[in-house]
Image 1 (cartoon, helix red, strand yellow):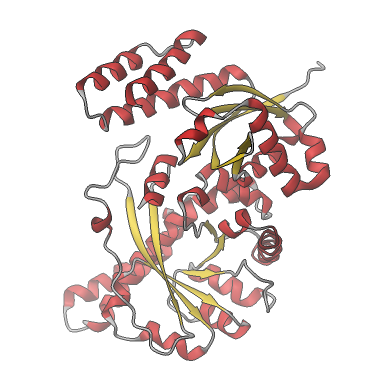
Image 2 (cartoon, each protein chain N blue to C red):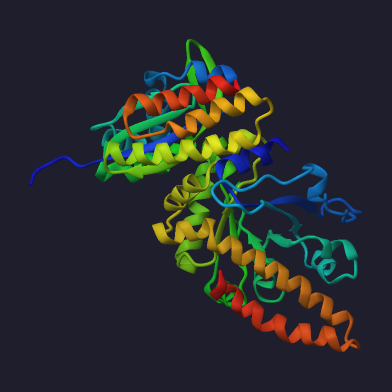
Length: 250
Length: 164
């Protein structure tokens, strides 16, 4: 909760709380996300504007095996309560699957160790077309020097393939002092090889597009299961162009 | 026209420890920033940035810092500022971070930005105020913010005396 207060005082207008699911243990159940109203009785107002701050919930799946991806297609209701879904692929095959067929909003790029696989252009281009964003973390870079080297080398290799599009920079801060303001994070983007425009977009417009993508994913999912109701079918037709509009709106 | 162009970076020191604010000095901050540049950009970066590097203005009550560097190397400086993790003074380490507010070409533009920023901060504090005295104190300082140096500084101090 401390972290959130610092976030708001520094100037972020929307924050997503992450919950990581790792598949190494045998039985994993997806728990319900913590509702933001439990943390704050009334959400404080963004600095500078008069809107309230949004707190979203986010799920990250660490996948080492293609069978783990079945969880995304399962009928567990809890998954749909999360606003944003991210996947963390560990092998090249999984990266390909995540970019091309999986129904996620973000693909996390590992920054804590040297990537076991090289990025190839076809899956990355398909992900850009589908509106999936690649995520880089910056908190390990602040903490440790070797992590910094891995972060920068992985980030630059990603930039060379995707030309700086569809990048989101986020923090995996566990303490309030590991957070950095939005202007600082955009400057970090310069270190990762982004141009100044792209770096500012990585903090602002791309994140907003991810949120919209998550919303369209939620509404589209709802349609598949209720085909009989004519009202929901209309929602499907508006959801599909909205997902293409998400990039131009943001 | 031959003139050295500088960039002035306005930053705010954010820390959890209230003692950290008391030990903010220009030397400790300068050392911390130089150390961060050296860690991130190495010897070349440190040498480039320290051509005209000074801490121009420091306000220990609000934690506002104004740094100066050359226009050619301000990107190196800005990209190394997120890596400042602690301030060290008299053998004590205080964890903190710097939040960049504004980069300007002259001190005057940074000052104008700082006055607007302080005004919004005072408004925010006004909302969280509990006692009536504090409210009046803050409202008075809000009305007296202006571009002359002494008044803007007294605006800062009044805000902190009212709430701390």
